[in-house]
Each structure stands twice: as structure tokens, then as C-alpha cells.
Image (cartoon, rainbow, N blue to C red):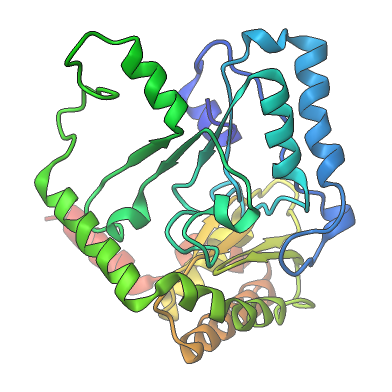
Amino acid sequence: MGGIAGNRKAFGNSLAGVDHIRHPLDIAKNAFTKGVPADGGIALANEFEQRIMTLHDPSTIAALIIEPMQGSAGVIVPPVGYLKRLRQICTQHGILLIFDEVITGFGRLGTKFGADYFDVVPDILTCAKGLTNGVVPMGAVAVKREIYDAFMENSAAGAIELPHGYTYSAIPIACAAAIATLDIFAAEKLEDRAASLSSYFESAAHALKGLPMVKDIRNIGLVAGIEFEAIVGKPGALAFATYLKCYEMGVHVRYTGDIIAISPPLTIEKHEIDRLFSTLADAIKSVVAAGDAGLHFNNYLKDEQVWANAQSNR
């Protein structure tokens, strides 16, 4: 079902009966926006209604699945009104609205969930990662009461509630990790902490504006994306080289396409935010200054390459 082009190419044919709407990123209008873009949200959401009315019968659409903030696609922050308008359209046409909150859940935006940040209530919400602090794999699904009741009222007496068939479902160690994590979230008020740091984090991220090849900077809560100008014939090369240089300099970031994504622990301190973005700035300048040679991955992590070669030759 996913819309990430690289994944779709790698895995071939996907689930039938799935359509996609375009993502809400408009760099031409909203480049270097701090936080939620102000323009274009309603018009973008209306495209969804136009699509379902023109190409589909709304009664044949089960659900719209969306990330409140798209993470793996490159930190795409929805404009003002976008999600609320999608909620209205789904309600009007009897379509379930499903939020994928694997990234936005558990404090990442400074609220418990992205649904809270944007004040939009989905019909179904999926979550993972932050649920156990990422130390043990675990996911969860939350549904509205009426969906739960519909399942139970149409199931045999004594049926298991919303049954799943995974071998590792409800494994005790994952459940224990989730309970401990949620206790820490409450005791240390990590959502509030993330919210209090978001302005400082935003300023540090946008301080990278003006660096060579930086095309856009996007942020919300404690997550930011730095997008580079594309290099013809070398898609993603600059971001990958910057990722390697940062790692070499002691900072771990994520790259996706031509974008560096920053998503630090909610326990990060201000001096660590400073180090994170100053290191990233130095890495960008270093890679760009090296020209074509700076884009070649073999020029980074030389000690690690020696170690890896030694292991392969054992």
C-alpha cells in the first residue's frame, strides 16, 4: 500500500485496489517554513475528494491511510487545515480515516500523538516504535468504540476481540517494555519536554539555511528534514555522503533520498542539539567542498572498511 517509490520498485506488484494521492509538500510555496506551512492545505485535501468522485465511487473506498507527518518520505509536514479537511471528507463519504502514527506517536511532536497535535480524531490509529522505546519490537492498533462494537456485535459469542494471528503477538518481554516505557513517559513528562525544546530545536535546524546545496528545511516538534538540491545522475548521493561524514564525526542521522532526517531522543539536551546541528553543518560543508570525490562512499569510515574487509577474509 505504501507510496515510497523506492520500496514499490523493489518489491514489485503491490496490493490491488489501492490508489494514492499526492503528498502535501510544496517547496515552491513553502520552502524553509518553520513548523506547519500556512498555505495550500485545503486545496490539497480537496484533491482527494475530486479523485474519489471522479475516478471512484466513494462507497467502494474502505479507508484513507495517512501519516499525520510523513517521516520516511522526508519529513513532510502537512499545511494548516489539510488533515481537518481530510477528516471532513472522510466523514461525509463514510470512509474510515486511519492515522499511521509509528513515527508521530509518543511525544515526537510534543503531544501524545499527531492526532492531538493537529486536533483531528482518526477512526483507527496504528503505532509502534516509541511504544517500547524501540528496544523490543511491538505495535498496537486503537479503534473508535463504534468500530470495536461493530466487530463484537457481528462475531460469535465469546470470540476473541479483534483477533490477530502473529506468532509473536503479546510476547511478555515486549509488553513489559511497553508498560515500563509508558510509565517513564508519564513520570518524566517527556511529551511536555519535547514541546518545550521544539523552538530551540527549530532555530538550530533553520540555522543551516544558506549552506551550500541546502534546498529546504522542514521541522515540527522534535523532527527536522534538510533537503539538498538534486545532483543530476546521482540521486541521493549527497545525503548518503553527508550521513557517512556525520557518522564519522560521531553523530548519527538518517538519510532518505536527497534528505537528511533528524529525530533525536526526547531526552536530548540543548547542548546536544547544538552539537547535532553544528556537526551536520560541518559535514555538509566538507562533503560539498570535496566535489565529486566527496560523494564517493569509499572516502568515509576507512577504519570500518578495513575491519569489514578483515572479517570477510577470515
